[in-house]
Length: 137
Image (cartoon, rainbow, N blue to C red; front, side):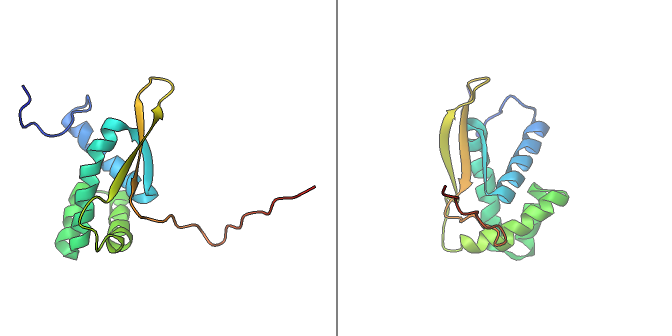
């Protein structure tokens, strides 16, 4: 019996699970939304929300806690995005920073797929990109 065994194994070893969560969270922080399987999205939600809470607390200690979870060069970039962009946006929010939207099953293996994204975060559209007007003939 699995009484009080929290988390999903995702059919991976501990080191592989840790690397998966790091990579998924870096991708989510940089792109603001990603598409993945339901189980991975549900597991990622708690991981990322804890990082956002660390970022909201601010200070060197919060930065180091996030760096511990997201090491490396891309982790440092994601940490800066988390602290300078996401944390101020969620200053008044006390939790629930992410949303999971269920999509259709994946075509090749019929796995349930979800979209995980940050709540109330507007996508930044580059100003130099101008939509071309439609040509009527």
